[in-house]
Image (cartoon, one colour):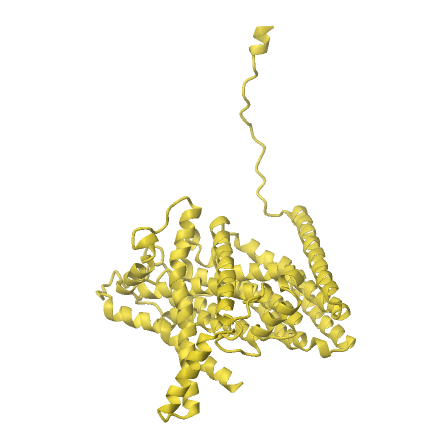
Length: 118
Length: 402
C-alpha cells in the first residue's frame, strides 16, 4: 500500500520535472532580445487601457459557491457506492435521501436565480 | 502463456541492483522511479504522435492532405514543430505576475501526467494499482482548473482574464456531472480500483450496457473538461483573441497545447476503462495493452471528430445545459440506480436488462421534458421578422398556349 503512494510521490517529481525540462532547454537555445515594445502586454495588439485586476462579474462567484457544495458532497457518495453490498435497505434509503437533499439544494439555487446567466 | 516482458525486466533489474550490494528498499525506489518516468514519458510520447494524428485527421476531414512534407506521410512534422517551439523566443510581459505566469504551463501538463499514474494499460501493466483510483483521478484532475486560472490572471491582460474566468466557470461546472457520473461505474463494480472495475466488467459485461446514460453524461462532461471545440469558450479565438494563453509564446505555449492533447487522450482512456472494459477481453499483458490502446485511440478519434464537426456553443447555453439538464438528470439517475440495484443485484442477466431499461427510460424522458421546456420558454431565440420574399414570376406559357 505504502509502495503505491511512494510511486505517486515519485510521479509528482517526474511530472513537474518533465514539463520544466523543455522550458529550461528553450531558455538555453532560444534567442533573447527583449525590448520595450516586445515586453508590453500584447492583449489584442492595441495598447492596454486601464487596470486589469478588477472585480467585474459576480455571476462567477455564485457558480463557484454552488460548485463547492456539490463537490464536497459528491465525495461522500464514493464510499457509500463501494460498500453497497454490505448495506441493509435502510442504508440504501439513507444514501438516496442524501442524494435527494443534494438535488434539493440545486432546486433551491435554481429558484433563487443563481443559475441564470445574466 | 502469459508472457510478461515488463515483469521479467523488473525482476532482472532488481537482481542486478541487489547484486551491487544495494538494499532491497533502495532497489524498490529505483524501480518505482523508472516506472514513473516511463508512465509520464509515455503520455508525452503519445502527445507527440497525437499532434501528427490530429493534424492529419483534421486535414482529411476538411478535404486537405494535412502535413505531408516532412518525412514519410509527414511523420517527422512533430519533431520539426518541437524544434521550432524550443528555438523560439519566449517573451514574458513586463506587467505579468512572473511566478504564477511561469508555473501555470507546468501545472497544465502536471495535472494530466498525474492521471496516467493510475491508468491500467493491461492486467499487470499499471503505474500503480491504487484502491482509491477513481477518487484520485477526480482529485488530480482539478489541477487543470488551477493552471487555467493562474495563466489567465497572471498575464495581466483583459482577454486572458476573461478567458480564465470563463474557463474556470466551465471547468468547475462540468466537474460536478463528471464526478457524479463517475459514481455509477464505481457503484456497479463496488470498487474504486480501476483494475477491479475492468475485472468486474469481464465478469458481468461492459458497463456501457449497464449505464448508457452515465456514459453519455461522462462523455459530454469530459468534452467540456478538455476544453475543445464545442466547449472551447476558454480560448474562443474569435471572441477573446486566444483566451487564457494570449500572452504565452514559444515552449510555454507548447506546454499548454501538450496539456490539452494529453488530457483528451487521458479522457479517451478513462472512457474505455470505465465503460468499455479497458484491456478486456485480452488477459495477456501485452495483448491487453494493444486492445486498450486500440479502444482509447478510437475514442480519441471520436473526440477529434466532434471537435471538427460542431461549432462552439454560447456561454449561457453551456452553463444552462450543465446546471439545468445534465446535473438534475444525473441526480435522478443516482437516486434510482441504487434503489433498482438493491432488488436486482443477484439476478444475473436480468440485472443488466433492468439497468439498461432504466437508463433508456430516463434518457428518453429527459430529452422529451427538456425539449418541451425549451420550446415553451424560448426567451432568447432570435425571431426573424416576416419579410418580403422574392417569388418567381407566374408562368405564362400555358396562357400563350391557350
